[in-house]
Amino acid sequence: MKRVLIRAAMLAAGLATSLAASTARADEAALRARSQPLLAALDGARLGACDGDLAANLASVTGDPDFDRLAADQRETLLFAQFGCLQRADDRPAIAATARRLLGVATRPEVRSQAALALMIDASRRNAPADMAANAQIVLETTPERLAQAPPKLFDWGLSGLTADRAASAAFVSVLRRAPWTTEDAHQAVDNGWALQEATFAAEAGDMTRAAAVLSRATQLPTLMAVYQDRRFEPLWPEMAAAGRFDWRALETTRLAGIDERIRREPRRLELVVERIKALNNLQRYDEARAVGADYVARMKRKDAFDDLEDQKAWVLYAYANVLSALGETAPADGALAAGADGQDKISQNVNRAALQLTLGHPAQALEAIEKVPPGYGTAYGRMVVASSKLCALAQLDRRPEAEAELAGLRSNWRDNPSAALQGLACLEQDDEAAAVLVRWLQDPTLRGGALAWFRHGAPSPAAKAAEAMRPAFLRRQSALKTRPEVQAALAKVGRSLAVDLGGDYGA
Image (cartoon, rainbow, N blue to C red; front, side, top):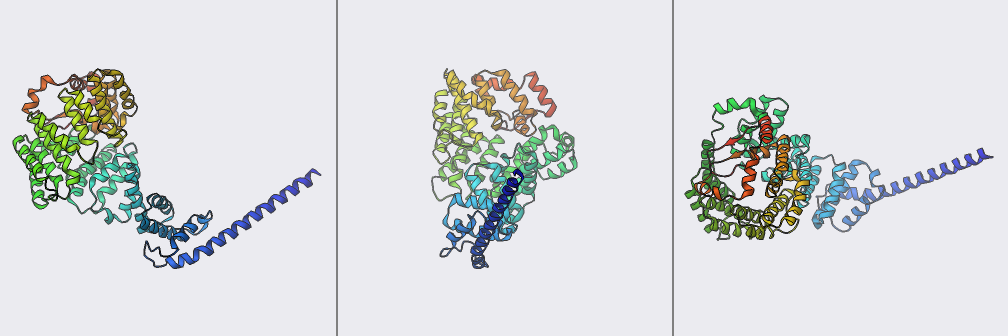
């Protein structure tokens, strides 16, 4: 009797399965029947052609539970059409969701590129650099001409999100260096910043021939200074030194000439003016740098004088403020930073104002500047700078409990900005812990470049020399960290310090 019951149950289950399968086939057939007219209507149609009920019908079909049963090429066609309709309607969340689905089935390069480009833009809005880099790589591998004029800083930001993933970073930088760029800025990145990253991966693999070849056209100070300091490149040092590639003053003089030539060709571009002021400052031509800064501060009052006024006005003022500081004109420097902070960027120049006031021993003014940054505003790196600056101001105002509350976040997130963590620890006199962080920073191959920059400094200006005795204690503590035996031992294993006979700040 029991066997009969079991068999009956099995037959019932089989019947249920058969009925379910039959229903699924019927649902799938119905979906195919609904899809065919849409596919026919879309044949040869332009992207974004969403006349009549097309958008609603597409949404119904792509949202059907059986949609994934359709052939991949049909899903690609239908999702791509829906993607176009959503773009026409500017429905950003739905665009991103559809683009993700589209990338899962698309095989046509043009389709993959458009979906990835939409996700790249979405990642930028979400402040997600790793997602931005992954999607930018798809665009560069399918239709690179779409990004041929994009600013290199956009991709540098994407690379910053891949720091911990060495393989992904290496793949992305390789694609970046081989894309058909059409701008001078991008070509400079190919030869310098991106070349440094690719050469570092080659050096880690022991391929110094390739590392040397990748660096063969590098001319910019930050790139060559990094090579000079990093022992991963030690086999290349003698030949590069003999070739004059570590002649910092000659390199910067040549760069200034190139900047002047570009300004003649692109007179409406303030970003080049920022670099010109920096170069003059580096070459210790302070009076010239101040004159250029003052000239362009006046010119910027004409709203239509420059194409990138909105983006670069604050950075012209920042470069000008640095020159004024080098000349000991601290009040005008603070005024320039204050003017730069009165814009869309709510963090950069307020942070820079706070740094100047902390250097001058004015913690109340520093705190006032830093509290103008909205809570939670900026990148993870920027938020660390804000927390560190606030901590130091609070510490100097003898508000230690509040300062220690800021230190908790700096400790737990130190990898987001090790320099900020070190400054915070120094401000609270946590020297042993600060030294330990600096050692870990040096030992980490993914972050080492920034750590080595801590052991790089230029020649102080006359004003800076005169003010040396008045430097706040927390700055002296930071400098003292570099001389501790455990720090020097860690440095000797991975790099070397660098003293540069130029003005400017080359450290972290």
